[in-house]
Image (spheres, rainbow, N blue to C red):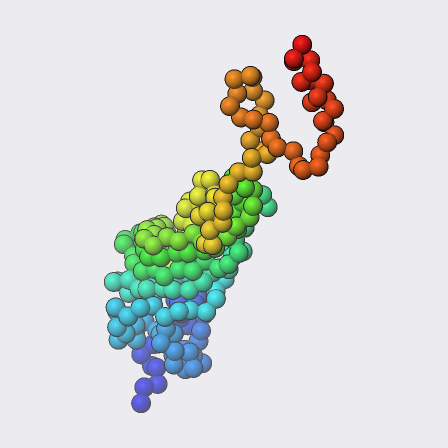
Length: 221
């Protein structure tokens, strides 16, 4: 009968969730496919897709339990990790990731998929819209140093942010909208050769009719 003695008596960090567990009380945890000690990790199919994890606050990687050939990680991080200024885009959903993580000497390499939805303001219509930033082939790295437990949350965050559109447009939204500048905003101060006409007034607005008539009368003299 397998009593889990191959795991050892030292408390372990279960790498896929970053929670510390005591082997003497972790029998129920080992029943799940992804709650495994280092002694059992070798028995899993290395090519099996990473199991979907529960929502987590930080993406923690326990180096002592990371196999030499690397491991797949999948999960979600809260929108709050982006913490953007009020006038900037707003995260409206979690950051989802599906990554392969492998160690090379003093460097940790992460590659795979990232996605997170944001609310942007269209540069043409000034209307808000939602667009999901999707990165199908993300490649990230970070220095390991002397730490054994690595927090890779900020690396994922920065990778998403650098893929923001320079000029967000609502016709590129997850649900594309009609993206056209209101012609009333096109009028600018130009000379007589200017190609842009005066913006149209709202219907029923006759406040300037008398002045327009006077200007026309003077021009015809």
